[in-house]
Length: 213
View 1: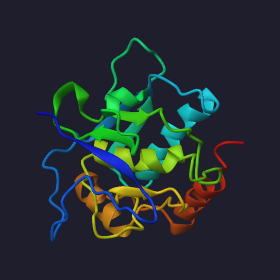
View 2: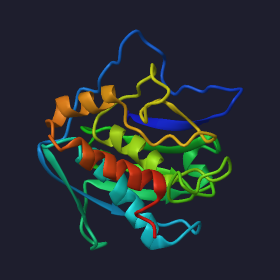
View 3: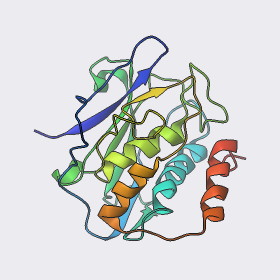
View 4: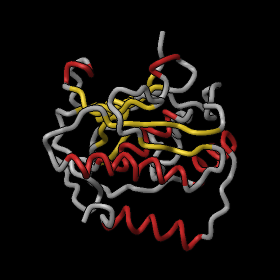
């Protein structure tokens, strides 16, 4: 049976978990071989410009790329070439009719579906947190979360400010990878030592929508 993780919506009254809270994070046992990871957005939503949707995928993967040294992400533009990460918008039926699910992704080590990410097109998406509202989830941070799973991270059930928390509050502008998730990812794929000002620059770009102008 293939394993995937769902990201669900959190509101002010209801907290939904897609994993059982444990006293520690039980890490997924498989990782990608060090080297290149190819990706492609195979389908698009009608919610905003297609070029921005392609860019959102790249921006989300860049958030992890800035932290790790052992993987390099490459966008594949040829639709006939197979890729490691297939990213696709899907209708509500794909998510068993569960409107509260924003997206899901498959962990590595599961054959052809490894790393694939599906986005629930029932939602009215926007590019990033600079445009998000309660009814319009931001694509970039959702993809950062899902690509965390694609690379092998399970949820962090203990820090609700971390991008890898199992639910997403649409009332907050969450866009941050927590220190524990960064350390967990670096344990898998090596640490990339960039100056903090470089990291801060790209965080500001994500927060202010600098990639979508």
